[in-house]
Image (tube, rainbow over the protein chains, first blue to last red):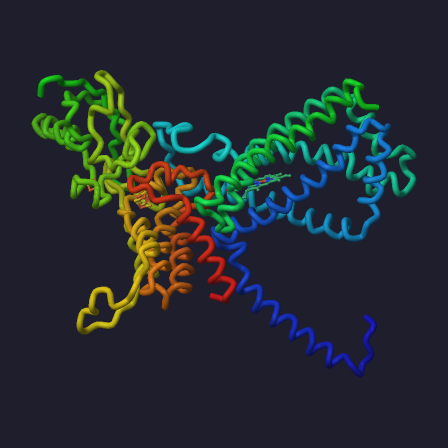
Length: 248
Length: 251
Ligand code: HEM
Ligand code: SF4
Ligand code: FES
């Protein structure tokens, strides 16, 4: 390390200070990982962050519809790859995504343990929607898509193109990936999963935050429904349109 | 009993919490004007006459205010009707010849005592952990000495409608008790008498709720849809808000 003997004692003090303070604050914040309401808060905060990310991501992707050979799209991708603010946010988002997945899986399995003997009679959709009861399944569909998607584009845009490992640009990469019909099908299924995940998730996150009043909740839910249809539709349209060769 | 109807009942029979249960099939002749519990009374009379063990089920007021009559009927707590308890459900809600499946509340936090009767003392322990207000003993305080606006009184009253029946837990895929706890916290945090314990109350009640083995909330809304007293989902939002505020204040 870089300290001299002279100030080692001070540093030790500082370390003790940081440690004790940190534990004090962590004690207060431990509910985020130990209580049912804390875990839900993590799901909602990370979920809403992912929704904000989806909006930006979708706007950038939609530039391929200019049909300018990917000129605008590549410029935007270039900006996103080199802007320090975007790169920092990206790291936070990635941590958020991991938290969302880990807490999500924990909640699905832990909640299942609360009723060992199952019902024989089925309420079906009489008291709730099927997709609100299937967030784990829908999230898993999104996750399978996500692994493939990150491999297709994120790895290429962050590690290969900037280091000259790949002399293509990101738009050319898209054209190449979507030549494969199986990739197109996986992407469309992923978008369906996302639609239903968001149809419940968007409004649900506001409820988790404690934001619920009859004067504005119907509005939030309508925005959520519109978001859940429009954004995944634009995402899904891109591979389809590219596969059909309508955008080159 | 003019127009009698035949009901094929599949009823959950379980000796006690330690033994396995199973469904038994019975046929009952009922009148459309009977309540669901009266139909069970008829069945039990017949079982006793035949020298068999009657079906154990909980009931008390039979007028929809005590919250005892817990039964899951064809997969839905208190049966197919909106905003009624089992004791207020009439047989005319079913058709002649229907097969009706009747089970107890199923939640690990509500162990079966016998047949359809479950132990809901987990709710009592949540209430004793914080669902109260402290008042000085001595002379009764004059009514209206504390002014409460109509709006606040209405909010508190809407939540105070909760009869602690547990239908919310039984309907929830996670067996979560948030609607019940939300109703209590909303009621007490709205009123001036509930202010001194406002923050410690919500934290204590949520801790107890988790410790009793109720699940977390996925906001599916099944609880509010099945609640016989139509407690709205917004009480859970209030619970969340109160809890996070208390946590931010270091409680
Ligand atoms: C871009 C991707 C995603 C977005 C935008 C998203 C968004 C959301 C939102 C807003 C919620 C509601 C939070 C709340 O109720 O307070 C939610 C819940 C949930 N998400 Fe995601 N999510 C995504 C990916 C995933 C993935 C990959 C999984 C994988 C396991 C997942 C699993 C879950 C689960 C299990 C819940 C329900 C938790 C519960 O309340 O019981 N999500 N998601
Ligand atoms: S909130 Fe409704 S369903 Fe739940 S215990 Fe109270 S009255 Fe019963
Ligand atoms: S018996 Fe009291 S509410 Fe049904």
